Image (cartoon, rainbow, N blue to C red):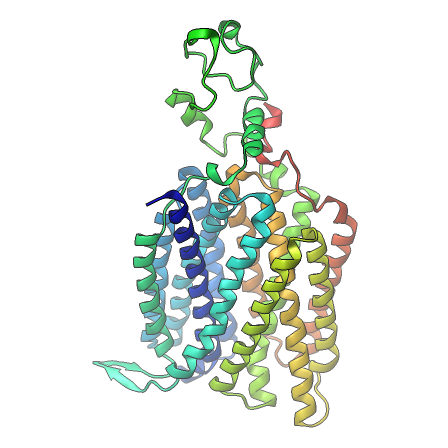
Length: 479
């Protein structure tokens, strides 16, 4: 099979991985609250169950990213991580007690740790100018899953039968359904995913820059190369003998395995301080945390809120998530178009403005709804619409910028750190909202304060939120 076809199949498989992650979220979230109630769980168990999924992903994301950076292997990591999704969803299907349900989300959450390896893989195999577009498509795949998931839920809620001693109903069916889907994905990854080399995706200029940076700390001319290499930067290892006519082949790699192995370690001169404590990095990681904290807090609040004020059940919640999925996909399509015409920092600024407007609206109208049913429903719909509208802008812009200001050799680990920050937010968000469903002014007030802080930080650091041309090997300059 030709490399280009392998590349397309591999990228399609990545899209399918994110699609299933969205389906799982949309299938389980509308029913988990009622499921916990049938098991006699107290209200705070909803926040615990949602946070458990993110907690295990938080711990495993950097680990999987570190392994992928060292081995340049992504396929095996995806296959390994998917096993936890399969086991976790089967445990969710069993659901004998609230503790088993909590454990099932903890186990399944390990599977999302592979996302750091996937983002590192995408960064290494895409050109910087195409990265926003690729990330927008991948994230849109997850949102497509959020759109498709409620449609599955409409049929899953009709399940009412037994498999031997196991009961299959509208609460347990999502677990066995997702278990089967992740099993099918294992076959797809085995047959359609390849660890394609990263070099073909980068232009010649990029490769020359990398060679210059790798040789920055070595003498331009080795003593024994004066007659053979003409003093070029792309010098061979010291043991290579001069070739005839005094010319070195430009396209043949150096035949020195020991040096190749030594240079292949991406963490040889890696510094956490230099990589993550720069001003622009702090802003982007803060954006990752605050936007996901607010998003998951509002998502946790939505189900009890619709039950309290509108008496929504599983069907109504599924339809609501379906409509939100359509809006988010449209948002990602627009961001994909916009990112080709304006800088990522402009897209990020637009997203933050929309998030601020949404939070102000929720603080004014949703904290203490007034009026009759139609008026309350209208206030709720506008608040949800504004919240969902800003997500694509912030999500795509901050991920794309992050990939451009971190070293390429350690993209897996860096994205693991970024996703762990997001995982911490998705742990604290549901816990914060789960305990304050009756004190919405406090909950929404803190969210508004966090957004205001992020907006101020971005305003002061706006000029630094650009791609840095020397970021490929941040530690090489000290050689």
